[in-house]
Picture (tube, rainbow, N blue to C red):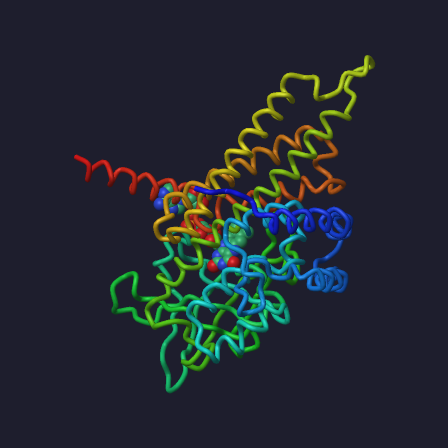
Length: 400
Ligand SMILES: Cc1cc2nc3c(=O)[nH]c(=O)nc-3n(C[C@H](O)[C@H](O)[C@H](O)COP(=O)(O)OP(=O)(O)OC[C@H]3O[C@@H](n4cnc5c(N)ncnc54)[C@H](O)[C@@H]3O)c2cc1C
C-alpha cells in the first residue's frame, strides 16, 4: 500500500479547501432556508468558477471531460468537498450521476455516450438511478417486480419505484427492470435508459424524507412506470446483465459515499472542538472542553475518524490496484464502519451544541437528518455484515 500524496493532489485539495470555505460554506444558511431549486442560479455561478479553475468533474474519465483522478486521489478530494453538502454538486462528482457516468462509460454504445454521457459529464443534464421498488425489499434486489417487455422495436416498462434520488429535474433515468423472467435469478434484469419526458414515466411525488420533500437535485422521487415505451437501443449493456453492471456501479459508488462522509465527520469534529473550547459552562469560566465527557468525545471521534479514513483510503487503493471485485470485503467493511462513525461524530457534535444543535443555525441538524440514511442506502449495514461474515467463514471452511 502506498498512500503518498502527490504535490498535484496536495495543491488541488488546498484549492478545494479554500473554495469550500470562501464560496460554499457561506451559502449554507440559504441552502438550509430555501428550496434547492431556488439556489440553482448561484450554484451555476459557482460551477462556472470551478470550471475556470480546471477542477470540474474530478473523478470522471479524461476522455469524457473529467480530470481522471484515481480513486485514492479522489478520496482526498472528496473528503475536502464533503465538508459541505454543496461540495460534490458544485464540483460535479455527485451521486447518483457519478455512478451513472461510470456505467455509461463502461457499457454505453457510441450513440448512448453521445446522447447521455457527454452532456452529463459537461453538467448540461442530470440523471437518476431507479432500482428500489415500493413493494419489494431493496436489500434483496433480485426480487424486482418492474418488467420491460419487448414490443416491436421497443421495451414497454411497467413498475413502481421509489427513492429515485434526484429524479426531479433529471433528464434521464437508468432503470432496472426484469427482461428475462425465465433466466436464472441473477440474469433476469437489465438496465434501460429512459428519458424522463417519456410518456408513462410518471413522477408521482418527491417523498418527504425526515420531514423534507426537497426539490430538484436534493430530493428522492416515487415513480410509476405505466406502459412506458422506449426503443430497444436504449438497453445499457447486454440484456440480462443488469445485476453484473449494478456491481460495477455499486462497488465504487459505496466508496464514493464513504469518502464524502469523511468530510462530514471532519466538519462535525471541527464544530465539536470549536464548541468545546468556546462554550463557557460555569461562572469560573470553565468551558465544555474541560469536562471529561467532552474530552472523551473528542479523543474517540479523532481516533475513529482517522481509522475510518485509513480504511477508506486502503479500499480505494485496493480498487485502483486489484479491482473492485477483489476489494469486496474492504468495501463492505467501510460501508458500515464509516456510516456508523459519521453518525456517532455528528451526534456528539450536535449534543455538544445543546439546543443550538437542534436548530438550522449550524449545519449539524442537516447532517443528522440526512445522513441517518447512510446506514440504509447502497446496502443496509446488516446486509453488508452478513455477506462479509459469510465470505470470511468460507475461507475458514476452505482452510480446514
Ligand atoms: C436517502 C436514500 C436515497 C436512496 N437513493 C436510491 C436511489 O437513488 N436509487 C435506488 O434505486 N434506491 C435508492 N435508495 C433505496 C435504498 O437502496 C434502499 O432503501 C435499501 O437498499 C434498503 O431497501 P428497502 O428500503 O427496501 O429495505 P428492506 O430491504 O425492506 O430492508 C429493511 C431493513 O431490514 C433489514 N434487513 C434487510 N435484509 C436483511 C438481512 N438479509 N439480514 C439482516 N437484516 C436485513 C435492514 O436493517 C434493512 O434496513 C435510497 C434510499 C435512501 C434512504
